Image 1 (cartoon, rainbow, N blue to C red):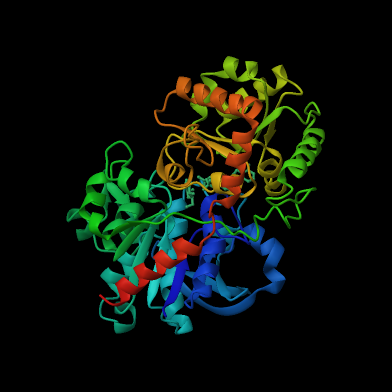
Image 2 (tube, rainbow, N blue to C red; image 1 turned 135 degrees about the horizontal axis):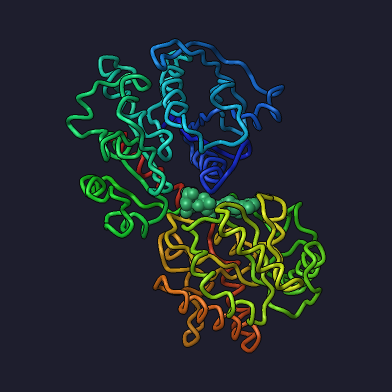
Length: 480
Ligand code: ADP
Ligand code: GLC
């Protein structure tokens, strides 16, 4: 069994801005249950410090060179079940209002990665595999292979790099190569790290890792094309025989309608019908929607960005308002989208609710109370929201892309199969047509709707199968 260090920029239960955090909070545990020793390392953000500082164990301190100066690093840790989480502390870099979006993000995450590499030496901890996630960690394989190749302890490490979202690449100016990463300029000349005149953390991760994974089989194929490849399709095609698509799971204990402390009425397959209605009435009351158990409630919990297909929705606001549904949207993000949804709510009080913000607890109640979950993404590497909604017997309506295609099976009225609804083309008419189709099934084919709900509840959204596939990947890597 292998010793694995996961490196990521966020992870539950400590901090979350998106699905990456869910994965880092649940995959290590699933792998531990399969016999691997898994540790995780991430930055010590302000929110983590505020909540957990008293519970953290101080491991060590040292310095790394950034901008030709020695910058201090302190490492702390905390166990969560059998998984050890390390935290890299630097107040200036990480104890800020938000996690990302600063003009010095390149420097911040160069520092983080350097600190992680030196942490191994300081703790005399030598994992068999370093599993890096997304651009924030993409330089680690490159830095270790290029600058520690004479050290057999570093040399023995194998690298897995998981792409959660190719759209965010970590592209920075070339000067950082020397000043922050301590790498030679010939890596720019030979193209290994070069992208568009600067350097790309994402590209480096793809080229220098021993195996690359992404978070669904369909997305692993899509990113080889120019439509989804974000200008890295040629690089990905070079590595396509080492690229695996492994669909994400969710923590089925955290997301469990039978025990969820965030929802007022617990349910399972037997009593979902009556209890979902009670959850619906409770949510309508909580959010100021008309209290009506018979109306179809459509939910949406999302970052409000172009990725998630909201522009499609906006093309069809009239049809949306005319539909015999209630709509609740929880999310924050692009101002333009927020503004549109605010207007929509104002013109449709009692029928449409836009809750602007990030609210973990409310998200659970929306998954539990809704009948349909809307996720018409332009692209979706995996998507976890549709998995959460399946777990709560809420039928996802999705576009057939990435992980949505791999996890949602469209209702087939002839052979009576499916666990949701889907459409293929990124076209707002197709979205509305599918929505109205779902509405018809909800009101007029109740038996079929109930069958779909049962299928949703029977869908395996756990890590069971995917954790096994990661184990195969690690085995293959270590036996090469
Ligand atoms: P992404 O990582 O691209 O945002 P995913 O579907 O993989 O999309 O994961 C999103 C996760 O974040 C889900 O667990 C979802 O419930 C949660 N989430 C998204 N927006 C919000 C919000 N506004 N409030 C609470 N949870 C949210
Ligand atoms: C990214 C993707 C999302 C995926 C998540 C976790 O945020 O946008 O589709 O589910 O990572 O892998």
